[in-house]
Image (cartoon, rainbow, N blue to C red; front, side, top):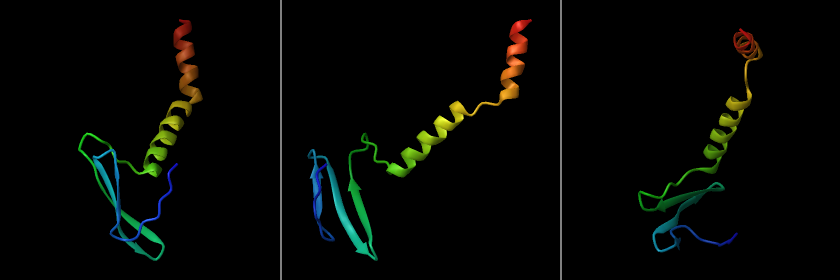
Length: 76
């Protein structure tokens, strides 16, 4: 992981196509502006994590009674 220090209005450039700029720093909150091509997805990590957790829960959280009903139908 590369760690850089930037002040407000300073930026970094990634792979010649992505610019990340420090827009403001207020009360311990850093606001970033990200300029990237449309074909590059820029996502907040907490949203990606929430979707993964939700998908995992949905795939594991089965209803036991529905499972038993399916088993009974398959036996016929």
